[in-house]
Image 1 (cartoon, rainbow, N blue to C red):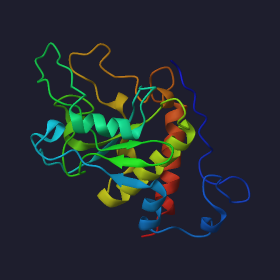
Image 2 (image 1 turned 180 degrees about the vertical axis):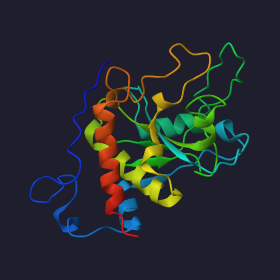
Image 3 (image 1 turned 120 degrees about the vertical axis):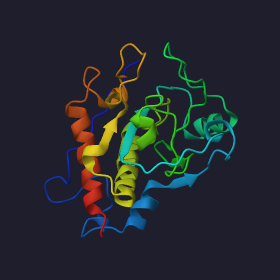
Amino acid sequence: MGVSVQCSPVGPLAGGRDPYRPPSSQSGGVSLGSMQRQVNLHVDLVKKGTYGRRVVRPMNPRYITIHSTQNYTAGADKHSEALKNGALRSPKTRYGNRIGFLIWHFTVEDGKAIQHLPTSEQGEHADFAGPGNRLSIGIEMCENRGNNLATTVERTAKLTAVLMKQKGIPLNNVVPHYHWPRRGKTPPNKNCPHFLLDHGRPGAKWRKFLGRVDYYYRQITP
């Protein structure tokens, strides 16, 4: 099933106003706390010692990896419940990767974002035992029916900007799931997030998304 997203232009439109920001916030920057409140983050961590957190693997994140759920029936709350109940198993490849439980750090929908895993811990969301899991924060974007996908993308851009500021991660290290090849999979580079890629590869849509991230990042005051 294909989904088309029309990202807004990078930065404000003519006249200086960004249509995704309220008029009162157009002059000057915003604090990190204010941007966090715009994300509307809810913390609902998987319990330590269970499922995706059975083994705590410390991480000093250097990347942010953007995914799409490709689940057209479940929003952020359902994904949070599935992670806490161990309903999502990681696949096994012909190279013998262990069968564990999928887990990522954040799920975003049009009205909020939910955190499942501390950003100081490795997840299981990108490339099995590769650097995508070992070094990156994983963000999943919901695309269930009834969820406004364009608003979800904007909320994800804001969350990404906040994490960049908090963790000192540069824009060049904000990557799609496609960026991390998966050993033993064909094709190795997944078409994800599919609605921000062009013909299965990063292109104009991905650059527009990075433009939104950069815009919000620059809005955050030191």
